[in-house]
Image 1: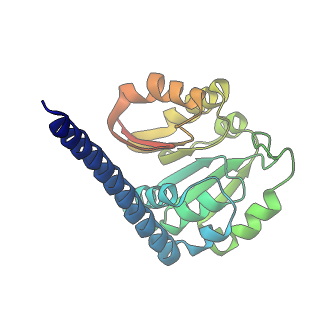
Image 2: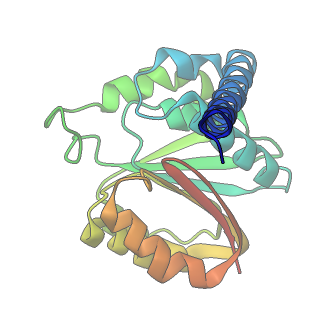
Length: 220
């Protein structure tokens, strides 16, 4: 192959790679824009609450909760509620007498900013949806020991250490009905979350999906 032919081939390959990268960025932008518009329409309050959830993650959380809430009297659980942004997203999707239980100590033990009581902020941020939200203040394993309702949906976003998330899964997963939905936040970086998903969730998956930092599955 001549030098000119090699140069043309190299340039064509480089242009193709750039076009593919641009297409991926464009698709990502369109998805995020759609998610933001959805948020403004269906759960605008969540945009005003500080959270580590991205707009894409909020959108997926809302859609999953909305679909589960099509059944009558569905029961939702969130472990790790912080200031209430994810609770607002989930509760905004609820219908048909569905209810969301939020489990947290609201003492900020697992947050980088340090210990502080955030329960008043959570209550203020979620007050417009208070009829759909029941906060259960305490350590997850203690709350689980006296919780007797069958669950249709669990959002795990509490202690991300292996010991912490393993304890949450062991205590709460037996309460999930067949065909129930589980969602894990911070699956993109938290090794403990990743290990529990691999060991305890994947063997039971009927179907699953991912975002860069979120995993969800329908369990058998």
